[in-house]
Length: 88
Image (cartoon, rainbow, N blue to C red):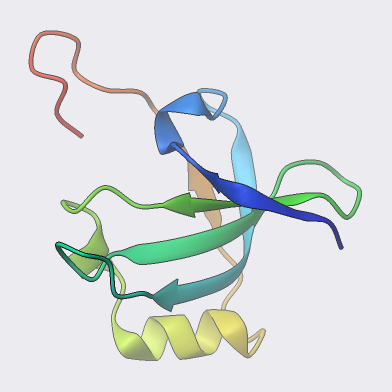
């Protein structure tokens, strides 16, 4: 599995489902965001994406454990931002 550096979520293709293969909370200088490792193709390539802070509370610690244990399989779908406000 080839893992690339963390990518900005805004660089993902809109409306494309990305399979989440790993999820974790990580300490950064200013906050503790959720970092997702997602599959970018049907192959083994994956990328890491920090969720915007407005979405971090969506995942409970139990959800993260289930994703990492293979008991919960979900996709990340990027829908874009609100153009005038740049909000999530």
